Image: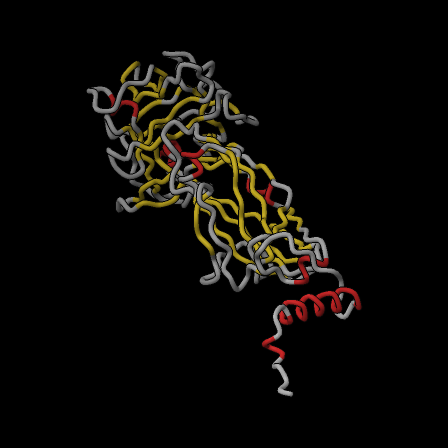
Length: 365
């Protein structure tokens, strides 16, 4: 009698496959138990153990962006008068707390959408002792609105492994009003395949603009510029330097007037609620506070100042755009009025005119 081939027996192949599956699961020949919850192929490690992850350190992304202040030197070349703060970096420790390897991505939610889109975000796996320097390769680039991908060679952590990821945010400038702010939340998401994920607890952080407040010091007398009560017509005088905040009489904000040229600013008193701006000696020959006038008007130049570095680095003449004269202080007593005189050309720190006309700028926290 002719033997019938096995492949010809109806239903045999499905029965054998089912029997093998029962044999494998029942005899324990594979470690753990696999549970198929979707139709996708899932690595056995993900199905035999929980997946989990943590991320700590992202709160350090909270910052206030502040524009710097530039001056010009005697040749008209731009120099840094006060360094700005247009970026910040956080070192985030990410730990894979499960028993399966995870491939990571970033998830950012919330905040102000328009401002998020203008804040650049870079991410890379720390390879040096700190996150101070952005490497030349292996860096993902995006924005808070569209988070970057973590470079594939750095994106995966083995089970129970951890690594430090560097997050750097930056802006290119600060708006004229200096009022933009956002509070997004960021999380690291680890995935096994496409259907198994673990998400770290989201961390919220606030980023905002700051116009930047400065104290104007006069080394020749040891005094500081003081706007008194900050009222319109108030004279700006010299007084003993004090510990200052962003809103008191020795606080001044510099707003760039780029249409006029490098190193040109409006200088606003932090003590004022009506935003008066020091005016160049057209009222009684002294610096006084008056109401702001719009750029392009006939008197706008009276409220514009050019910082010029001559002599010692970090020491500046404050020149009126309207008259070309320099803010000067010849006395040394509290309450002495500021005045304006022809700008001196000496670079000697012992010259009387140099001492009267040079000021330094100190950032107010």
